Image (cartoon, rainbow, N blue to C red; front, side, top):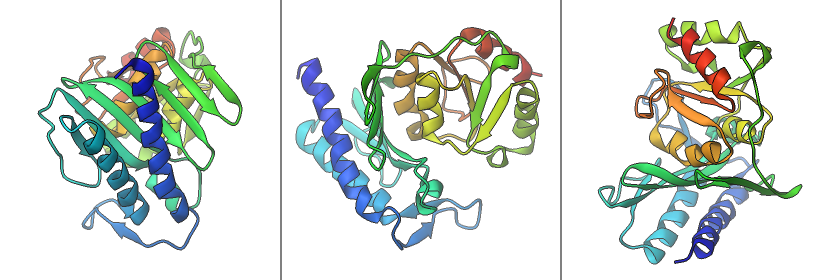
Amino acid sequence: MSAVDFENFVHELATVSGQAILPFFRTALGVEDKSRGAVFDPVTAADRAAEQAMRALIRGTFPSHGVRGEEFPDDGVDADYVWVLDPIDGTKSFICGLPAWGTLIGLCRQGQPVYGMMHQPFIRERFYGDGVQARYRGPAGERRLAVRPCAGLEEATLLTTSPLLMSEENRARYTEVEKRVRLPRYGGDCYAYCMLAAGHADLVIETNLNDFDIMPLVPIISGAGGIVTNWEGGADLSGGRVVAAGDRRAHEAALKVLAG
């Protein structure tokens, strides 16, 4: 398939997932807790319906590709190309009726993220990128995404979903960064990373992420000119501790504080 056809396919995945999700949003849907008594980890019929719809479309179009998703077992993840899906990133916001959630669609080649999209069907926004460039499509039209300059922590807007999700040690280290920034805000989930790529925020710091929480977002951030690493500054995000920044100066400053 050509690059244009491939992009159209990813948009088709976004469309079918949105069609599966929207009938459930802001309804009295049932919620299950996947945590088995640990921190509340909700899942809904909307999560499962969206992932099933995307898996079916991928299998029918790229039968040799693998799929890794949040709600169903891995399928062919030793393939060269593996799709990484999170049907609703921000399920806690979803069940509260808040629109700070989105569908994450990523493609990895030999383990490295090469394309990603975040789709919010209720607001009708799409953020997508291939690591070289990133774009936005939504009610405000279509445009290229670009991060903004930020010389240091004292100028930075810092986003995270919630420090309460962090371990005591990680939260203490995160808090030292938060003390130094101009503005911290909570509750963004995947939207936080897209706002960074769009130039509305400067840092995102999180822990306990799974690969389907972050892999689809990496090509969007890097395509917009930003950087995503672990807390040690490396490329391996499998440990779940992530620092994303629009400006390498702010990124370096955050890493120094996190290192203690």
